[in-house]
Amino acid sequence: MDTSHSRMAPADALVIFGVTGDLAHKMIFPALYAMAKRGVLNVPVVGVAGSQLSLAQLRQRVEDSVAEAGKIDDRAAFDHLLSLLCYVGGDYNDPDTFIALKQALGAARRPAHYLAIPPALFAIVIRGLGAAGLADQARVIVEKPFGRDLASAQALNRIALSVFAEDAIFRIDHYLGKEAIMNILYFRFANSFLEPIWNRNYVSSVQITLSENFGIKERGAFYESAGCLRDVIQNHLFQIVALLAMEPPAYQGFGAVHSEKAKVFQAMRPLQPDDVVRGQYSGYRQEAGVAPDSDVETYCALRLFIDSWRWQGVPWYLRSGKCLAETAAEVLVELKPPPQKLFDDAAAVTGRANYFRFRISPNSAVALAARVKRAGKEFTGDQRELYLLDEQLGEETPYERLLEDAMAGDGALFTREDAVEAAWAVVDLVLDAHQPAYPYQPGSWGPQQADTLIAADSIWHNPMPEKGRK
Image (cartoon, rainbow, N blue to C red; front, side, top):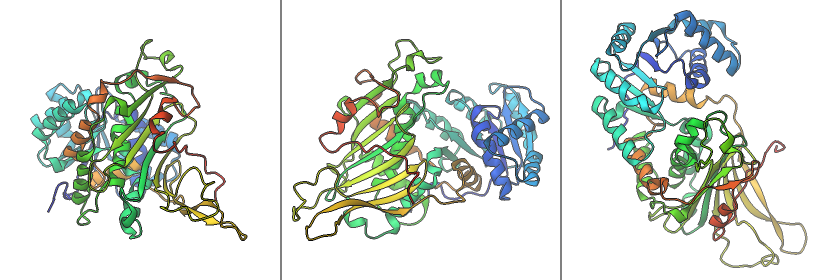
């Protein structure tokens, strides 16, 4: 039985490296406040960063962050959060910083160390924690990206595993904490009607779109080092593919889910240059921090095959990009048409066959498209959507859910070493061997070459706003 990421004892402190950074400000502080409101945050929170801050200044940063994210609507919970804070300032290369951290932790023996820092600092901090004896019963929460190619991912995993056990390493991909992503896993295996058709015999193609209608937002230097394939597709979209493509887990424990997802990545055929279309929106090269002759992709579409018994021969089309027509994330699982054209409108029916549609954002939904007959003598009809799930109130934010799970020692929504490396192996060749990026206009759906990529099997499904839906 796979016991990877078996549940650990709860953490008795939270250490946030990079507490003065953007991620802490935008995501972590609001998540901690939400946890405090629900009464599940009752351990010391130690912020660590290079700058010298007073505790009053750190508290003010937390107040500004929570106020920006919404409002402080539970003063007692907010004051409780502030009471848990303390701060350690110092250089991550300096052993004295870790000695000061050990003093700040006091009696805590099972801290969770959250690395909300640039990837270049991961190894320095992990080694520093090991040298100071701060890793013995601790866990480490690592923010993506986990490397920038297969070799660097393997190197990062080696360093992490030299200090922490695999089940004490929580690789956080906030996308896995989304309610709609978790619903894909539930919908697949909680319903018996899907299993007979969820394979190469009935599915003609699968496509996943993650689009944003805005640009890189002053992150030019970061984007120049990453690009869309590394930033979004190799992690977020591959995780969605794994949930859609995996075999049923043998038992409820999350070790079984991790194992089946890893098998999907291992079965993916390595991408070749002809499988990938890269694009760059007009105006990207004028953004701050971007090289004037940059070939970094702000859009990427690819065709993927999973060489497994279930999916052999079924093409998976993934695309993501900045400055596209809509901000949305959707999956379309298109089924094969019926084998016989029986009805009066058979010759006239063009376009899509039946499909399942999973909308992930901005709202979550599951829909099934089926043909229904029009009134009258003729056997003619239209394709309509059965809408199975709409937005649910009371959802936890991804960071709130993931932080709480990591503190509790629950590894279900985190990523395992073998899955990370297998996913990098799929894209490794095309990170360097590829065509130049094609220009596209902001507000479009990307370069026309992406339409050619999918043309043999389907056409792209462009997510639409669903504001008017009841």
